Length: 114
Image 1 (cartoon, one colour):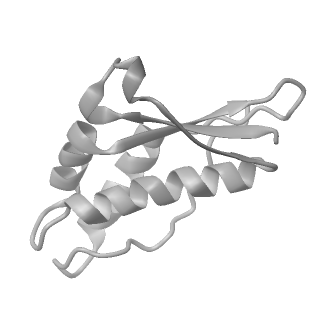
Image 2: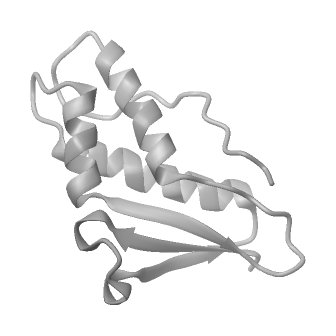
């Protein structure tokens, strides 16, 4: 497997014991999709009715999961930032017309390929 997903806990910043290995994936696209889903699920979980995207983002930054991708030697490099992705999703939440928490529509988020 070329792409491993690890998860840090925002609530346990810089605590190496809080880091966990989520899984390994053949493609960068699979690994990115898993990371995005974790962030989406966490934002949905922390968001309450009437809460802005910015408020949900603040909660996620305090308590959400911060997934990241480690690329195996020889595999195509991929860069994914859960924080950048969460900020983009929070902006979409601000644009949402209803105040109910729930899944956010997928957007065109493309991580930098390095």
